[in-house]
Length: 221
Image (tube, rainbow, N blue to C red; front, side, top):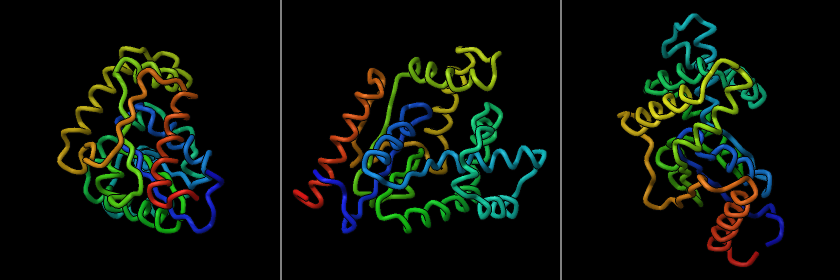
């Protein structure tokens, strides 16, 4: 398959639980096929960070204002990946007006992108229902904890692996049981278990899945 040309439109939704590999996988695909990439989780983290900076005071008006100030550059802020931000992010993500405000941002991003990968916990079921390819990432809790521990350790030297594992278990429970946009695997999604995959193996698997899907849509291009 040669490099994707200007005539092709292809959109990928990458769902999955926290630390399952969906962000890494999404970025690998985007880089390989020169696609635009968006991590929906960073949108909620951005709102959470602004909420913390506003002394935990937030409402629909505040969130709408924050959502309109989001830029891709601001989403690269390292402060978005602290445990405190993650905790508040989980709380505000349950608010309908928060999801509504950020849904608009995601829809606009996708609309403007001919080739795009968007990852998150409800992308395939709520945001990109008609995605050309839906991927659902999963991973064992032990492996997820190890991955997230490495990330958090650079920000908080006192954090323990046990704390990270407990937080992930609680987060998964909340995401799957919440009433608004719960974490689910849609019927037409492809399951990607990253538990025993290293980066190179994950990349190879994902590239093959994307190539197969593009071929099904456009034939031999």
